[in-house]
Image 1 (cartoon, rainbow, N blue to C red):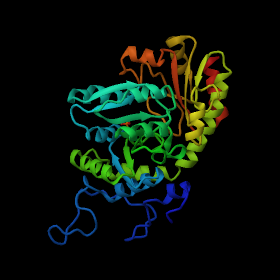
Image 2 (cartoon, rainbow, N blue to C red):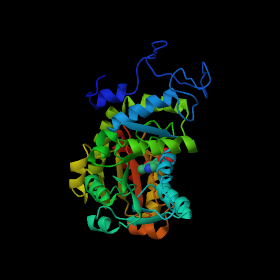
Image 3 (cartoon, rainbow, N blue to C red):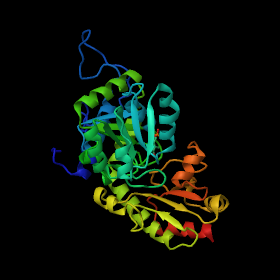
Image 4 (tube, rainbow, N blue to C red):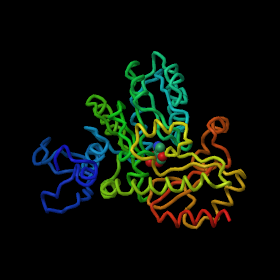
Length: 383
Ligand SMILES: *Cc1c(COP(=O)(O)O)cnc(C)c1O
């Protein structure tokens, strides 16, 4: 594979070649903790201990870096462990600008773990450029955002935020979990770090928990790698193998997720039970223009409000037969959940109310089943 290979080719080949020892087409699961040294301090390859590096993980790190258009990749035991590695770069007194609508676990990590260590956090609606610009302080070191956000699917202009951060000397980290590298390339828009929960679309089959950080900046990479090795929240080789298998189909899967979600969003908009449907691909989405500019598809997530509140939402969810009630997202199978009592239950009630995370809100992770069966399932559950 040459360096100019396009996305689909890189998804299948980047970071991997047939095993030089056996010709095995798939990168082996190097289930080993340590590596023989012919003489003290001399290594056969680049490996000495599997917390520091493992060949299956190295292949995955190179593969994910390539998909994000980055020079460097680091993998972690979960998306939260990846975020934690970035937050470990800060010191007491440092200030973070955090987008106001984030994954519940992100909110918990920032507010319940790191603010005890003297990190100051401002929650800001980063779709509002003036509010974003006004949030910087002399001690601001990091802006952290998701786009589209979870669960309200707000779309934040990455290039505009990167420009603000560059002017103020702060890092911009973008959680690209919802968009995936298929649809959005934050590093090319000026982000310093891309973060993933590879549990979601990168894994795509709801069978692995994992995380990753990608960057083009050599100095940032060295700092992150130091913490990755020092803290040790690394994934095992079997999980890395499963993720390498998954990325080979990510472009095909995400394409179908987008098609199905687009059709379902249009169907829900017509339905009187759903007075509010949020999907970045709809003309009615407040940041539809930004989504069109920075994404090449609108993703597989839809958020909608049911008119009967929590009771109606609960009844609807319980009656679904193909959609499964579950946390998480991004797998081939369709999932549905109630953010107020599931994924975002750890977000304080007043913040939930401010963001519009009402009791009647439901979040669809639209899978890649037949779309007519998915729509039929929703109709029978409402009927
Ligand atoms: C799930 C998720 C995370 C956390 O990842 P884990 O793999 O569950 O630790 C972070 N960000 C987003 C957007 C997520 O959906």
